[in-house]
Image (cartoon, rainbow, N blue to C red; front, side):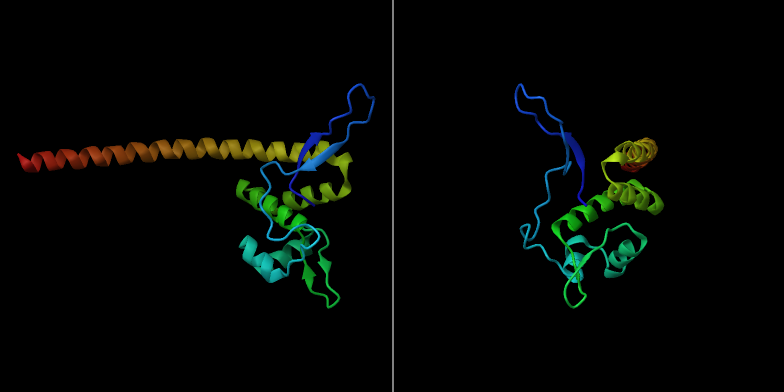
Length: 165
């Protein structure tokens, strides 16, 4: 799985073709520590790259938030660049406040394929609305803090002026 932004492929000029949709990173891709093909990371390396704990990574796998992680011949987990991209996206979803159940549902939809694009979009749009509501609440809270800070700044200057008279 990858962090996805769906874009349409460009058809050849004057050609009738099925325009395919391709998943690409929505932001400039984060530089991976290793190139594709050589991207086998241990759980401890992923812990270092992501800041997540090994317990969290195993939990993500257990609840279905991560698809099946490749294993070495000794059974050791081997993460790929695609897994790192997915974890980066999951981190963004966590920052939105999306419930874990919704994140797991989104992961299930991704695994089900392109036919789930409308459901995925709906889930992300609902999350976006929630984020916009939280941003508005935070902006209101910031305005209250700014008024209080200004009040105390003005009160402090007034007291200093009174003392110096």
